[in-house]
Length: 119
Image (cartoon, rainbow, N blue to C red):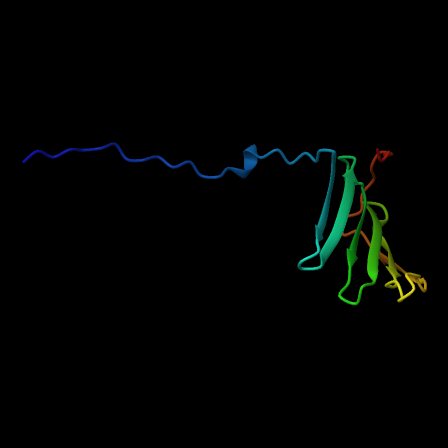
């Protein structure tokens, strides 16, 4: 009988020390319009890479109304959102109005940062 020996397989473990934790600027958006499932929504968000984020999203609710959320987030002011509800069009195709809601959440880790500019 012939015995064959293979060298042990080496597996490298994940090393968090080599992960780049530096935030980077980004800009993304998406739109979904699936009339079969009535899934209609969109989002747009921009970050300057220094913890400052600005964005908005909208979605059509099951009752036909549209929810629009515009938000900002930074280390000084936390997360702030303005929520609007646009009523569904009536049978004449007219909208009856909107309702505004303002929300503020304090930042969990406030610290000083340089000034920023959204693109």
